[in-house]
Length: 122
Image (tube, rainbow, N blue to C red; front, side):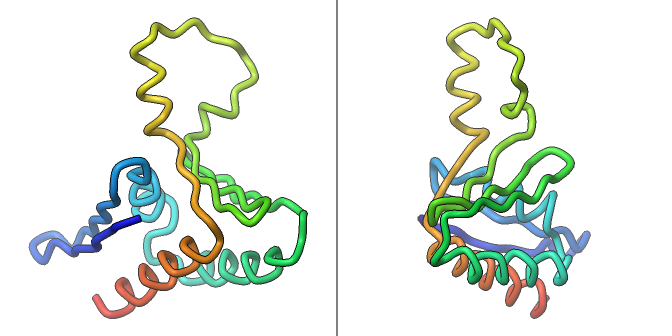
């Protein structure tokens, strides 16, 4: 998984660009985490606690949520939690694939630590 963090020096906004299949992780970092160091520390603590566990932990966000389970971090759009079956056409399937991403705890921990260092520095 490749990624790059940037800060717009004109307006102070952050940008997180991730490789294909992981784009939603960048969106989650920007929209749901930002510079919330307490949230980052909580997530990192949960990853450490769950490394040798089969338990699940969720952090529900406004639009995107994090699920830690089975040694994987899953970011997904909240609308995918809906239990109602909706009739979408075939094109929506591709959109759904861009609305969820997962990676192992180790990779996710490195990403979150890199984000934390980046927003601390800038």
